[in-house]
Picture 1 (cartoon, rainbow, N blue to C red):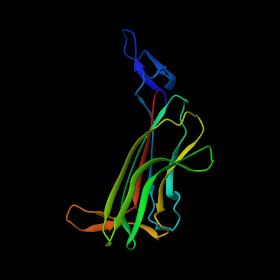
Picture 2: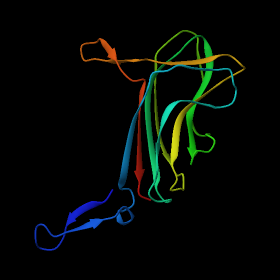
Picture 3: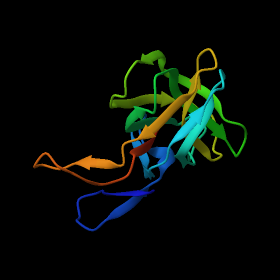
Length: 172
């Protein structure tokens, strides 16, 4: 994404400012994606990628990616689980990059708003995909059922997506 700035003494005299000329910390691109409603279940004690996630292709290998993701989730039954963030570079295997909830036990069904804010340094200009991740403890069934409703101003609910991803490429 090239930006344009006014230079010189005259209005209308412009020059393009390439991504590579942006100062460190500048936002180079933003990708937003809705996480569609779906449920996921696992008995695996290793991390499992869940949901649709989102992807971004950095313009420079020195760029960082700021990842934010919020989802309103409910365990489907009494279970013990972990929740995290996984990453895949250029279509490769997903691997855990951040643990958000290490071990949570829900004795009853409750709503839990889980928000991920993570700054990643993938060191690539290839496509980088991010997904939510979960795993079970002791082989118990861990079930995430995203809440398919969004709250309205009058206290009611309306149909909505399960979550929202925002990925921002930050100049390094």
